[in-house]
Length: 134
Image (cartoon, rainbow, N blue to C red; front, top):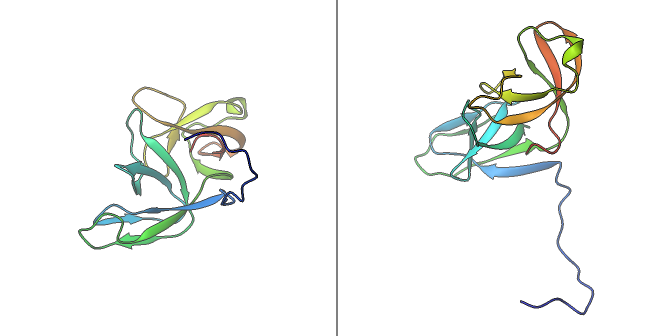
């Protein structure tokens, strides 16, 4: 395809909330970290090089054996509070990695980055900015 020489009315979306098909026989819980596995949404797990989709906007269950039979909305931007053991204000600015669908860690070994710490209000949780990680 060659470059255009005319103005275009290019379709667009806001991009803050997007939707993905859900993996067969999977439930995505509202407010949890979501990954894409073979292009379909499911609970975030700990593994290197996963595709972080965002934070679930809603709870959706795909009770069928068909990938994508239902869709889930996820936030791709925002600041969310997640579990982080021994969180401290000195952690602000650190990148965090997923351990599961609600827990993050500062340890990158065999894990996928999901955001950066922007605030800590207690020793067991931190607010994570996910913008740019999904």
